[in-house]
Image (cartoon, rainbow, N blue to C red; front, side, top):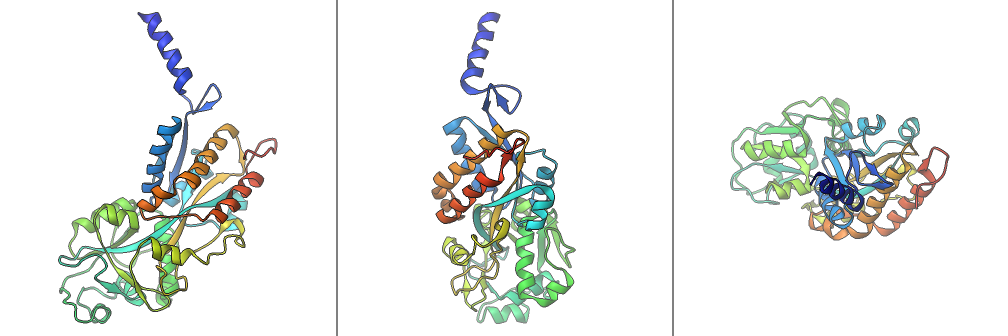
Length: 351
């Protein structure tokens, strides 16, 4: 019986790559990543489909962009994920390359009984003043001006923001800096800021949970979290002066003119883009990997996974209201893989 069990386990190991490490008999059985919560719903969907197809598991920690950057710098994961793109000088300093994986939108969400998704409108200035703590009630004249004829409650506004270092916060505060000089001077743009008011939730999940529970609250989350949690999203006034709803069409409109080819290190910011149909808080989510790889076979497995996602995961992404990367951008990215990611001997890992 014992001998039969040993033989069975040996056969299972050979067939499915079972074992204790990430690589078994030359076959990678698992890859690991950590970082942004913004793309987590689509990464989870892709990972489940890829596992069924290949038996390779993705272990992804949805801990926020700041945590993802720390972990990839420390080489405790195979890749990091950040919604805040690193500048070329930062990439050079830490020996990293980055590439965009998916695009989506950050959306303000509220808990106001009787208000339907897309019914309440906010101008850029009004949204900034709410997060500055200057507007404290929902029937404030500034909100009423954005919503003529709408009956607004005399209810205290509870501001909800991220408590952790977050690329979603980086995108949100980048937008606020572009539309509010006061925000730019007093608070600024970063993954973590000194919030003038409000309570903090960890991850997009934490912010969504607070908004769901607290009447009168307002928060900001990635669009998929708004849909999954059935939160009431707002219309925002964009750079062209039009009030638009968040959806795949308005995200695509914002991303349409992005100059990925001319951006060193793929450093592109999609907030406050021109165009009457553009969602003003659109952003890309980026993958970070070391240029020199200690485990080339694992790095190749990571790149193979992302190549599959680019080429086979578009419909899954769209169903979750993310914007897939255009084919011309994918071509640019994979050319960069071939020239930038190498083993210790300087040999390219891709293709």
